[in-house]
Image (cartoon, rainbow, N blue to C red; front, side, top):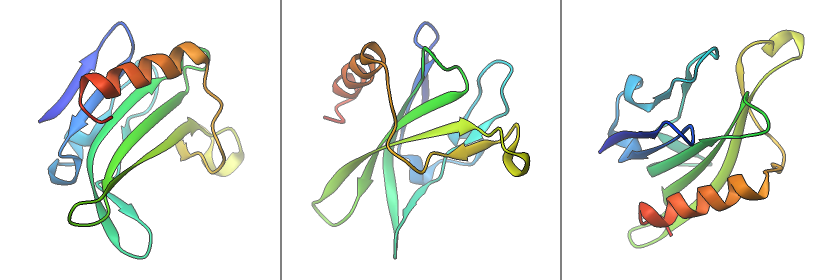
Length: 123
């Protein structure tokens, strides 16, 4: 339970995200503002996020890619790949913003993300 960080990879794993306090769900990276992850996936209903694995992109330090395991039913879970980036437009300048579009990720970063997901039994 809680946050496990890998200093070399600038990544981390959060278990039981929906039960964690805001501080325990916050990613702290050097020289960037804190990134507070949501506890629930919001569609029409709030679905609990069971675990989140994150990695800071190696080629863009102000981008964090997150893999969420979401509980959608009694026996059904699914994975969501998302990203957050530091905004550069006036309203969001210097703040974390949710990536609305498909993310581009370097192949080595993707391999690390998948490797960590296997390590933590997400896949």
